Length: 246
Image 1 (cartoon, helix red, strand yellow):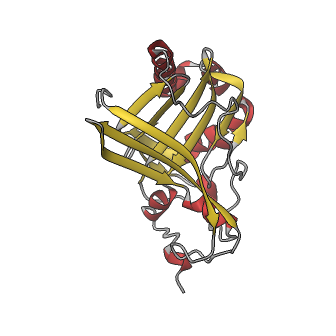
Image 2: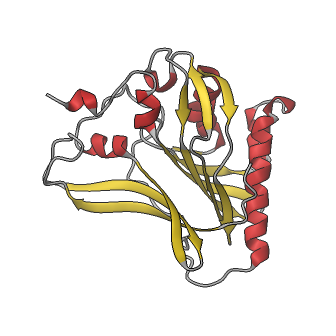
């Protein structure tokens, strides 16, 4: 497990443009398109030494009318930034705020690993999440709102339809002010047992995941997630982009 002592800069949002030419085999629409992205830059001596970039290609395919999967459990949205409109941190923040955020994220991760100690998922989540949490999930799963709907539309399918989950660790885990983030390459290895994202049981596969959080007081209020779905699906024999070729 890394010591998480390095310096990282994180950016997340949408790249907007006119979809006027083929991209990765996706036919253009000549309309506005939004490409969700998150990027992590590790900085050494004032220069970028390493970059991790994630983008949601399935989200772009949905906008282009080329969605390749069964209906997802959550909602398809052009996802907003923080509800508090304060996600761009131009000035220094009190170090204790970032420490509090990172501690909360780490305790939440620990609760996932100890979830059987709770009476149920509601009790587990209530330890670290606001009741009206917003979970901005990746295309293939979708976005959901409130603890009960998060359980119904993401947590329960994830825990019951993906077997033999193994945590591989995070490359970066950081926080500044009320915002925290992590990513792994991969975070998880697991085996789809049937039903997840509407797909049949499949081969063991990796999930490369980004999580970005907003803390509100003593609990988490918002969570943005990116997963390299194309890689996850290809490891199971489903080449999403390959199927677009004539």
